Length: 382
Image (cartoon, rainbow, N blue to C red):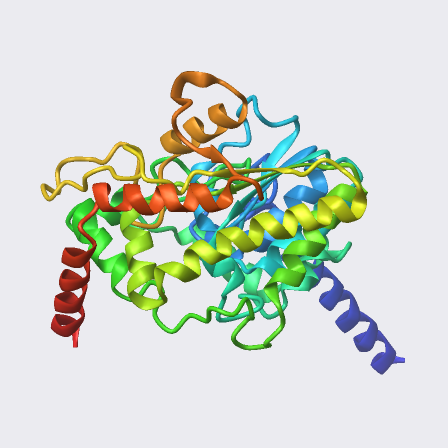
């Protein structure tokens, strides 16, 4: 009888402990999954679990519009812009492959409310070293994930770390999924300004990346994921806009140095012809494809060597600011303030467009000097 009593007490203690952990994690809310914080604390661990956080928020919000892409899309595009059908959410995730973006799209589609998608293309999405950057990525789409994370000991540790806090850390994301508009300012200052940050970014950015549209670890084809996403948009009557992003022109020279400029141009052609082929297959109008990775005053902004001066449109070579993203969204909305920025491309004009960009390239950047400087930096870093 006494043994049964102790067994029952032990079971009750375990249940109380589990329940207490769940309540504690819910109250502290270390990842900012709930928008209604009981205790206001800086979510210093949020960025570590942002793919999970975004999956749960999409489940709760059930957005009509989403943004897909990598950290560049996370940084640059505000889902509150009038271009999007509300409710809207920035579902881009840092370092994500085309497989992860297709998975995010399919998950958002399952919520039953999706009408519009902005797909921000990134060369590394198609030529990623890994098919998925988080090993348990698919589990984030489970129905019970919103509750199971509350019972996690990892979450408990992050809750305790959130309480302790740190003046050196800060929240990176807005509730709508976009990164905070000033989130990179501290790192820019730490790295002695925009120009030095650019040099650091470029040093190994495309080094050892594949060029065959296959994930380096699994050898699966990234274009299959892209085409499935596009075809699914057609089959579900989703409005899809596809854009090549307005990175700084130095990034394209970095790609040329490591992989070859022709790889970048061929990628654009392959995208255009793939979308056209799918549109013919389903007998629907071809989706809009905008090329914003063009030689223009916005993409060629001079990086200041004075660390005290801020760039207007770019953080560094890879990431651009919310200010430039707003211009892109205005352009997509047919607001013609900057109608010379961005080109609608299709199978009829793609060859002429790429040829024109080759001509402009010579006017905007000294390619030979860039290569020499890259060689010097690489040799110096050894």
